[in-house]
Image 1 (cartoon, rainbow, N blue to C red):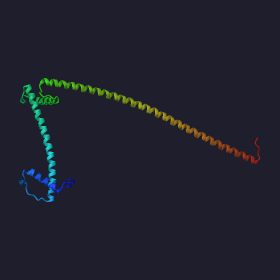
Image 2: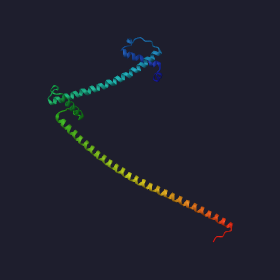
Image 3: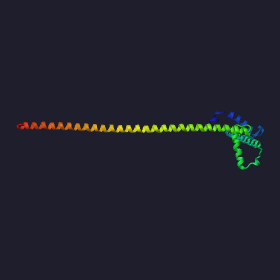
Image 4: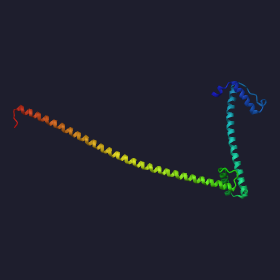
Length: 216
């Protein structure tokens, strides 16, 4: 709707008129219609939707044409393979036809323009070399991965040992702290009791002095 509001009504009318002519082939073949603003806007909206649909159809047709071209190329490759082997499709069983399809795919993979036996052998040998190199790289990566796993495992075990030592040290420190606290509390208790006994003794001496009783 915002796109339609940006386009003047006169421009919408021009585009709609041209679109109708393109659909019917000639201007005289376009059916008469009431050229009111509401109809122009409706036809303009319909035109935009139709163009979007046409684009989707064009993309679909292009994709199907591409696939058809690939299938035709594959068919031509299969025919060349059969000619190189001196055979026809009727000479092959279903299993042989499947093998032929696989050979055609390998030919495309190896980028062989003329799939004859020497080129196949050379291409397959190159493919074998690449496979061997890939397998070697895979084994090397697996070794590196195993090495890293071992290192990670050892580091994890060492970390657990360090954590255990720290926890044990922390536990011992907590025990010593508790012992120091208990010892401090005991000393404080003894000091308090000593002060209490000393005060009681002084009070007793005062009482004795008041009674006139002498201490031997």
